Image (cartoon, rainbow, N blue to C red; front, top):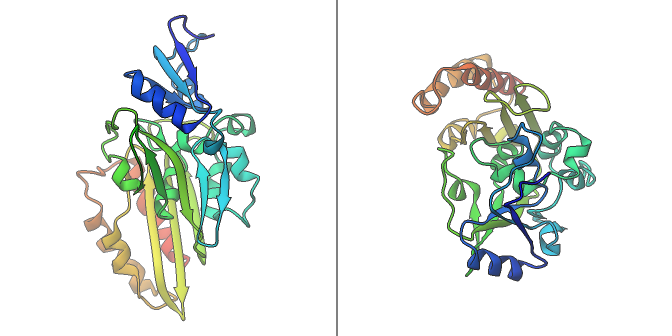
Length: 279
């Protein structure tokens, strides 16, 4: 049951959504509403005073694919993405979505809602960060393609421009020799310790040509300087390489940002386990 003081607006097009956003100050966006429901424990569902639903905007519910990338509307459901299969969807992203809630929730939950949830970076964030996904961000006056690190704040306290929303998510179609996704925390639910880890490797002529390491939970990061330290090394890695990289890794992951904790211990354990797969 909704609280009686909520007004829900339904947009049939992006232009209509932009008009509503421009004319109604402080309006909140939703599609599947699973994130709003997740945060509440009472019998009644309490929404903000004004809510704009994007679930009926056709352009936001489409999936398109080219040779270079696959593009998702922000209101595409997680179940629709799984229906593409691993042949059409990056393995690391596919495996991440499989760990989210249950099939019933995934038919409602959307990709845009999963990455835009406030206060905690949810399951698809780390894989998309590792894959160098870009976001089409629309405001009442323009549409811009930006990297995720430009749109989101690492403090979890970002304040988007009034009327701004994510309309599309573009994921490059790169070929990776190794893709690893790991989820930390209780299965199927989000708690303070819930985090996601993504690890991607591309090799060429027994050299490590590219590597991506991403983490997302209370905050997110990709340390490109640490990735660059590993790129170019000969494969397989030696035991000496592993020891050397793990010794240096603590220098790149600032305890001030990532303080000693259960999550920090999990990250370094996952990092070492993943690097050992390259030996």
